[in-house]
Image: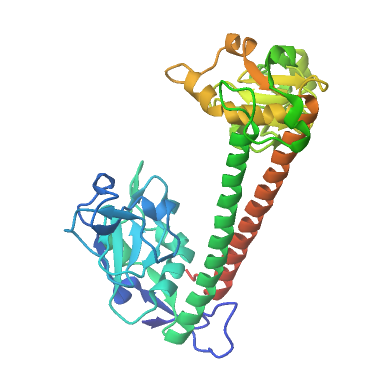
Length: 417
């Protein structure tokens, strides 16, 4: 190990004073590729616990204590307690740097995976956090054009700052893994809230072909069946347009314009801002129009079925269809949640080879079932409150993740070129 003078983290437990050392991973670990085991070999009735490399992206963080998959394949490489797993290929370099320490023996490890097996005494949980913290250094070793790869021969050449004191390694690992447990608990709560919202959507609205929901607020129990109406009778339909993109004066004029570039902002209640803005001249010289705040919008192609409510006055592109609800007949938020329920239907009826689209005639004839406006408002308020709880919980998780990032930056030394 090569000593690096002054290589010290910003945060330090007070009992530790010795410097960290830049250390080649070849000294710390042997690195292997996973065996001939693929996603197709996963079998829920299998006899062997297993991990497919793709699961490292979706199911695991830095510490693996529970295995979610089984297989009947027993050959290939099996884990030893303390192994660290890392994908060996992905489309993006960042995806490759996803280290997870496995704390279980004899788990079948899939192909397209690197297995880092410590050959000196080192806390593998500490090392997995360090590897993820040091992703910028490891990314320098990645090869490939379309699909990025990292091989054992490349990994072992990487040098990382390591402290040899086992007690300090343990304290850092415990600190970070405890925070991850808190994040996991909050993530579980978020999933429960989402499940509860899903249940409300299923039960506060009638099932297809029915006129009465399963759950109803007490004051509306005696109101009788919901009524099937054409959406055209309850709301004014509108559309959008794209101003000539060759006319620079039609853009960047401060008018918010919802386009396909904003698809990632849909299905999240309000849309507050847009990636592209157009100008007054763009409005005047195209079929684009301004729609008022509260307008419900729906994507009818390229993200078909996604919906939102305009937070302020905005224009939209031709990829969207919009409705301004007649307040005495239809709540805009009730309509938004109707669209959320109908999203699988919209996706299933869209046609087209390259880009799937729903034609305008479908929406002209679209039927929905509605209760009284007061019951609509009560249902919408209930679901909106649930979405508020979900958003607050998601924000709490993001703040915890930011705290974890800052903690890692303080507990590990900054990399020295």
